[in-house]
Amino acid sequence: MITAAFFLLGLLTGSFAEYAVHRLMHAGMIRGKRHAEHHRDAWSQGFWPDFLDYLLPGSPLLLPPWLLGVGAGMGWTAGAVLWTAFMAYAHSLQHDNPAACLWTRMPVHYVHHREQ
Image 1: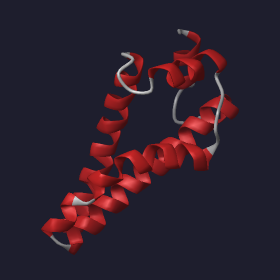
Image 2 (image 1 turned 180 degrees about the vertical axis):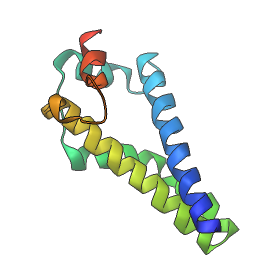
Image 3 (image 1 turned 90 degrees about the vertical axis):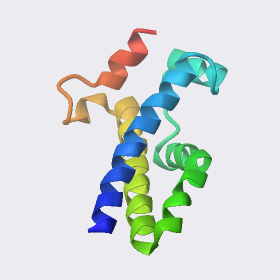
Image 4 (image 1 turned 120 degrees about the horizontal axis):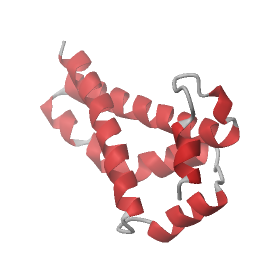
């Protein structure tokens, strides 16, 4: 039960963290220049570079739940890493083949880049 709860918490926290970091990028507080270039040129790094770009800076956040126990740590880590993998996949797909994003009626990321 603890593992499942922390898994869901890891997914949810990953979602909020991704949104918050993206907003900070648009505000120019984090990687502003690189993010602006990304929007201007609409390039994709691919799955693995995106995955590592998302996971490595946030990896210290994987540690605290392990202090609560193995179940909490495993659940949190699995949820956070799964969210990170999904975001890397979705980001790459939205650049490389936006029509394949079947979970949205119109690929939001594609529109997001066109609005900049």
